Amino acid sequence: MIVSAHQPNFAPWVGFFDKMLHSDVFVLLDTVQFIKRGYQNRARVKGPGGAQWLTVPVVSKGRYDQLTKDVEIDESADWRRVHLRTLRTVLAKAPFLDEVLACVEPVYQLDDSSKLAEFNTALIRLLASRLGIRTRLVLASELDCGGQSTQLMLNVTRAVGGDVYLSGPTGRDYLEPELFASAGVTLRFHSFEPFAYPQRFGEFVPGLSCLDYLANTGFKRWD
Image (cartoon, rainbow, N blue to C red):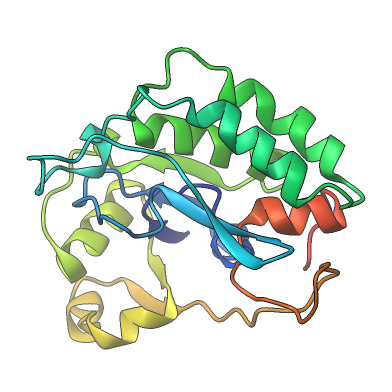
């Protein structure tokens, strides 16, 4: 059984879903430390001025070491309406924008998603389903796994019954293959090359939110 893991990022890029697609179980790491100004609460879409950020505002003052699962959304700003308005404006002539908005608007209207991880997870589950990805999604907080780095990845893999861990390419820089080998878990690395899809406003920009991809191509997989 192939297991992979990643932080529950906001509207992540296509490579995130490709790693999920190549896994039997995908663990959303909501027990790791929140990274400010990372991809856990923001993603980019392309407009007339180039790639621009969509940011989910969060409460971070005085909470420097908070875990992802504990991060609260700052609802003092009308960010939900702003996001949808920005998508309508920036991607106005994208051929599948209406279909994407019809899909994601219910998630934006959820009143019980006051935590960032809850909102992101709901969005990830919905988009994965619409893309026909049947991989089982599990929250790390449901597994009660400790450890860091290599040990954490081993723990979550074994907790869901996996015998293969599929790491992202950056795992080559910090994972310890010998620990996987001694635990009887095969370590593999996911490889995904960004590909060009139709985008307006000039030269193709890789690494944008899946919302940009879906608005321009529709809910069709790239595999």
